[in-house]
Image (cartoon, rainbow, N blue to C red; front, side):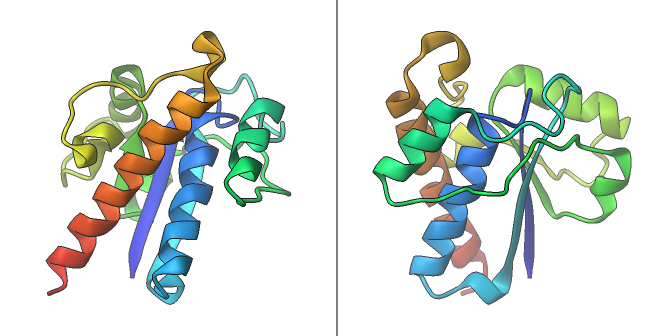
Length: 153
């Protein structure tokens, strides 16, 4: 089973979008039973808050729901519970390394590397461009799924 944690700053925009996009890709491929997918924040600012309405609306445009999701914080103990920690940007990667004290097993990745790019996922909190963030995240998630499926062949 693949255990994936998507991570962003507040867990109300990009990481929950990634969580639910990946869940849909996995379900559409008939692989849901092979994945545990979640998302979390590196900060405490939004804990308990639901997915940000414009992010929720962007997901809905693509037929993806996210009801019931509220922001949770990444914990040091998560390192032993998940195989992959997928950050949305360089700051997320730095903060994950701080929370975990290191990445001794090489479990931390930036999402866009799976789309063949080293850049950060567009941050809609500042850009207000949730469509661009969706496209970045979808491309990264498709690349991640492809990589994982190639590993099992």
